[in-house]
Amino acid sequence: MALKDTADQSRTRLLLALWELGTAGTEIKKGDLSKKVVRTGEKSGDYQGFLDELNQKGAIAFPARGKISISAPQQIQELLRVGLGDESFTFKAQIGKNTANALLQLIRGMGTVAPMATQAATIDSYEAFKPAALEVYDRLNRDFNLNNLVPIYRLRREIGDRVTRTHFDEWLLEMQSKDIFQLIGGEMPELTSDKTEDSIKTALGAMRYYAKRI
Image (cartoon, rainbow, N blue to C red; front, side, top):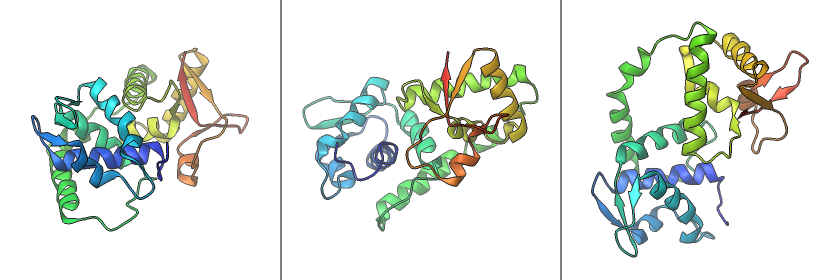
């Protein structure tokens, strides 16, 4: 694969282009999509794996050769919301009017559900944390094909302000002690200080970057 960005960043740009080009039932040409996402030195085939993933999830369909049909824009929106929430994602060049307007549409659409998100129940016990953490883990692992290694910083950011940082650390470590998660160190590509901060440090000072469901 000759992608110039990471897989996550390239997937997010593809999702934004799909969001810009069509709504439910819209049929678009693969060539039009390629013009928006393929960069110099890349090939349209470099993005086919992402399209196949979206097809398997039911977000898009391939009604004919060279065509893409938008089947579930709400699923594209949710995946895009997570992708844009990753602080490592940035635009490498000036974006056009259509892309900017697509982002505005996305933000406004997210605003209609924001009150529900802000009213989500605060997680104030281990018993409430465990199912929430498992739901977020399974969703991220499924939607981003993380091969059962979900970055802890993404778990923390997805759960958000519903739980304090101290309780997140305490309860995630408790899930490990009860053989629900295995917390793993190792190396993380494109590790930044904020990703390190949102990971977990054990009592002995060792960093853990990934969670694996046992």
